[in-house]
Length: 471
Image (cartoon, rainbow, N blue to C red):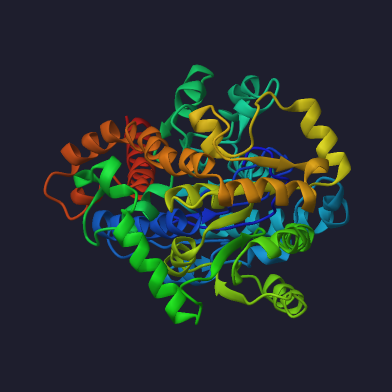
């Protein structure tokens, strides 16, 4: 979501590195598919680092997905929840704490003496960290490689592309997750590689286990077929005691406390407007792995006059089980919209922001949509109800259309393969190059995975840079 207000989070760390997924001061923000991509990156860095240079490789950083990242071996400095802030106006009381966390991360990186520093998303924190790290090393030969994963949404803002040339001063390589970004970066003097959207890792994981993206037919296998989705949905309903005749709606109010508190009450009021038209209504809410969010949601649902099933938002299997059991979804703009497209679940995207943030966006934006499916396909596939227009009555009217109008539903369902094709086709060439380089190694079968391509791009960029320095 290019217009998502600032998120202050510090996830993921790769290869003998200190990493931040950090903070953004810019409301032009889109979250990567997160869990799969970040855990995959760390896993690949550990596996390849040990294989290529012995067991001395370590990872350290700050992460957003605590269980997944730590399970992959990441030693975290502090959890992102400590600085999980969104919005422009809302940021002001937390500026001192954010600056202190940047300094803490910088000091830890210097002490860690990394070979590579990979920042993930959230340019406000990440770029400040990289700038200060570059100053600390002061152009020394042994300074670490600086790689940023997930390019900022420069294409969404007036004058955004002109700022790319300045990034070359402290970013050595940009890993892009949208297929049109790398060429624009290179045209402005910033080395970049399109590594694929992390959603593709999720798509592969939902289907034939052990089958690499290399062998998948995008049209038929990356997007789950009807029988698979039906079985998954029936299993989910049975597990949670939901009637086979129930109308199940999934609500995705966001992952951060501020947006959940803002959007969830609107979503509940929206559903109440439609309750008389829906048979045996039940709601499912994937809850973000954040203690305050979980507590807030649990308290709010007690007063809701419908059955509500809460599931862990960090579980890919449970999320897609809920999607497959549902008739439609209400979604706060972000990565979740892409997941719903993959699950072929029609949805309505909703978003509200502080008045000052809304004014800033209207003044600066140069694109017509905020949802990535709409941006990638350059068409209003997914309905967007935003800012002051985002009221429960407006949402109810659009959600009713998505539930009962077969033509509207089919437009979203039929666009899933097109979206996956747009994301997957460009990474085939990069995967082919790595397949030739790796030969018969254990990684060669995974080189079409975005997390593998991202990790290998960093490793080979670092290798090339060291060869240049030696010469």
